[in-house]
Length: 213
Image 1 (cartoon, rainbow, N blue to C red):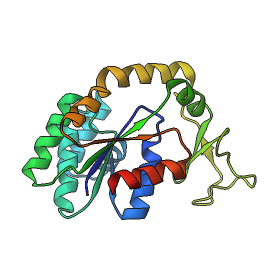
Image 2: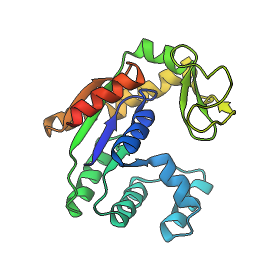
Image 3: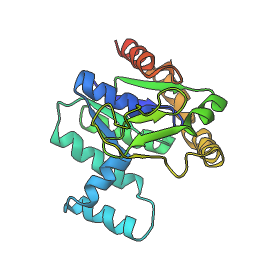
């Protein structure tokens, strides 16, 4: 099964992707993770990534598609979660063409719906474990009293510099301009299913499992 997790920044896509990795043995393809991995891989594609990033430029869509293709070729029978890609209609078309070339179906697109005001309140209270990336929240899921991550036991927690109200509103605006058209795009293809992205983590996970069937 291959799926896309779609939703605004802070909707919990990364958290739910990790849940699916644990529950279903899927492979999470996060654009950021793939770029960091490629940069230190020593491969031809990795050298292209490093050169672009060292120049301070944005990595092009064709490079990201190339990285995804490497993953598909390395595990042709795998189940993939596309997290953070596609973000534009052009990227969605490119991903669709890639999957078609490999005979790899896209089974489902999960839209994680949110209320903007509630999302801002949640994200400005968010922190993550520096070791494993587990997400905590001052309001709904505080860091344990013993100061240790429940997943890996790490004791260092960080807040993203852009997890503030002004930065988040800018990121949301970019999402609505560039990425939200994908909701209609995948609805028209009959692939879209929606869940409440602002519920408790376990409740959202259960809703996604139900949507996937």
